[in-house]
Length: 277
Length: 358
Image (cartoon, rainbow over all chains, first blue to last red; front, side, top):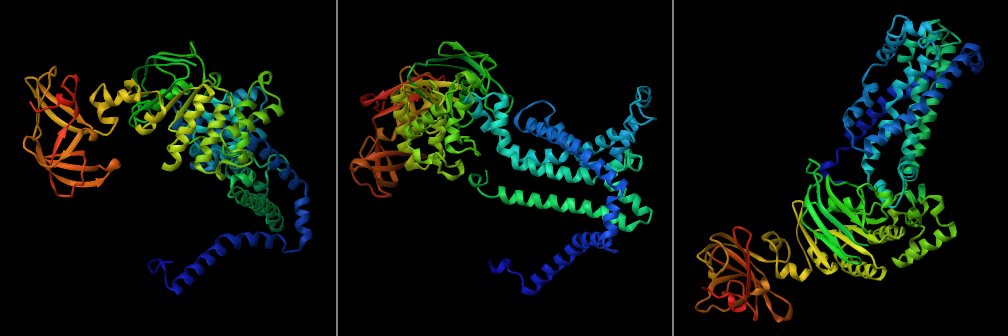
């Protein structure tokens, strides 16, 4: 280290201490608080709150919504980033901007838009009612809102990597006689598989934790349209703190597992390809 | 496999993809042709059109007598070695070479054992059999280039396209690899097209060199003809290593300021460009009747000669002296040959006694 970049020891220690304090205050303390509150009266009340029928229904619904939204976004994100990175077509830039739209719009607004379109008073409200199709305050609405909000995760993870890798390998595959699907399955997909997995993990974590958009379209019908984050809110508002924090712990654990899995992935893929693949 | 290119044009409307403005070229079966030109002259665009990765706006391309206008890259069976090799990074060297065989339709796909045998044979041909299990990021640039070549040859192409394949190699390796690739071309009976901006590479490897400038082939000839009879001032400037002088033609005489006047029968009055190769500039001690100058620098060259940069008036001329010359010494120059281009592109070549001051 050169003298020019070598800060005095006290300054370095001070900065490191500051970073640690902030880290604890902002990240660790709230996380710890969730588990502490959940276990305030011991393990049993917490487990009871989780095993309660409404809580179980909320978990099932959350898993179901994620099980639909995540595969849809995986395919959609893969298709979008593939099209943008490997082909030239009019409107390419517009598509890039559109992919980021869900990130820049408040989730509550995203939810409201669906109410506006499919709700009883909405554009298609009457048409849907005549046919006895319910979208808002039902599973389709939850899936729609979640899919919209979590769409960018897969696409935004893949796009920079695909653009950096360019089209050369695909062109080489074409000159060697490979068709479009063969090229995609044998060349394009294997080149991004780890990034894809990382994007899917993030997308899944967000799909399960999504609150704002889902809150608007859910209708909060207990045991029917309540997802885990909504269930946490209801319990909290009813002063059932142990239950609220117990379910919240589950969500937090889910986030931690996702982060852990992503870290392992990144460790794997940072090694030379020959060893990792 | 013979190739005929007739009047191809291609305009992308962007500078990133240089345009082609009416290119025609015929390659005979077994011929090795180099496309030589500065960057942006359209040589890679032409190669991509032959590979089927681009399609021309107008004009025809015949490969082996077949019009390939509607034939996509994957159906052309043309081997391509890309500039940065474009190896499949997640596949071993073995799998890279096997790719072209594995993606064949089931009916035409060789059996596993046969693929294995063919790949080992190809890796032996490019002299890297021991690298089969390695990955592209674990081998050197020269080795990658051999893998790219083996991969392209795996589909048994009769036409091989090489896009600046030696650019990433260091100078010492490059010379060997050049000769080795040319040898392979002859041994396998291929027809090859090499894209390069390195004239030494083009001259050494190719039967004919097509010089490209701004989307056109300005001359396609055997290497010695490019040097002896350049078709235009651009070719004379780009190929070889000539002193370029500006002159004026007046009444069948070309006047080069400070270097005298020379007979110029056939050139119209007006500006002219004169090219004199260093080998045709004899540097001698000052003598009456010769243009006199000063040696700016001098260094020993092959055959006991000295290469000298002579400053005469505002000109700087490279030439050779038969005797040692000291920096700053007074000296004179004598021209043994020169090529001049008139204002309308007319060429005049002067040799020996023709190059006498008139």
